[in-house]
Length: 383
Image 1: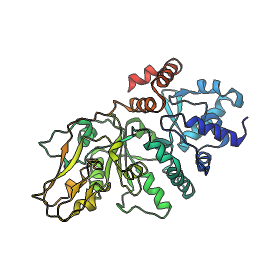
Image 2: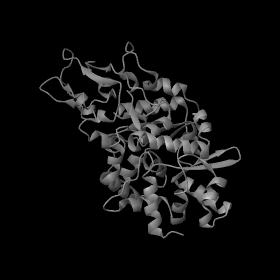
Image 3: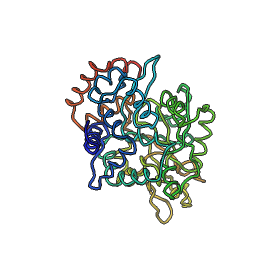
Image 4: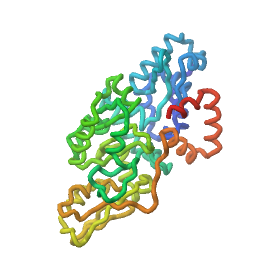
């Protein structure tokens, strides 16, 4: 058995090889995060998992040195799944397990067991290293789409940017969960400045089922989804989706709490990461200089002038929040000439990130290995 300190170092190094890694720090705060998520025996098991689901039988073969029976191994895996440190899937009579990245992944799954101490460590880790890990690759895990009423009817909107179309098309189950970021900052005594909404994270499909089954969320109707989106729009929250055409979640985000939006908002040019299809344009003839749009913008993309604000096109992410509250309808979203087309699904997104991070040949070798060992074809077919 590896000594405790050694196994957490090994686990950190292992997680650092994922598409969104687990960088080291001078302070060592990453080890406090890992020890919250995994006890020593769980850490031993975690380094033997992969990013694709494996059966108990397959995992047990890799865990022989730990001396665990299959029943004992399953109890540990189920406990890790319940804690949100790995992802468990049940298909028929078989259980499958795989590892997860920290964000989006393990962190969000702590929503019902979050402590002040863990949130302190997460904010420390984000500020010291992890935010840079998320933003330095050049391909972001989430994307921005405009709020529903911000795009004029005469202006064509792509289906994957049309929130109402996406929700009408998606199949049940649908779930809503508390926002992990706002709950976390509540525990730190730094409550959100933008909204009182807490139950605002919308989840779809298999991920929704997993959340519901683990008591992290409740099932809702599509009508309730639109009610939540309307409340979020009224409070000036930005719509963030996973960066693919496959709808898995919708986060209603603020730049003061959201650990996905906050690091991007601090960049000189958020468009380096958010590849959006729209930008705001102000009609100087209609604008009366009320500056409501400036107060509404969470990304500081509107610059105050003597009368008519100016749109900073390096910062404007096309969320549309400034459009919906302009009393003179002086602002509109315009579609960019160059279309951004998100990846087909989450697998395609992470393969793109891995290619950028490790190189194409490394990705090809990884995929070939997974095809033979984990039957990747079955997963691709399902997606």
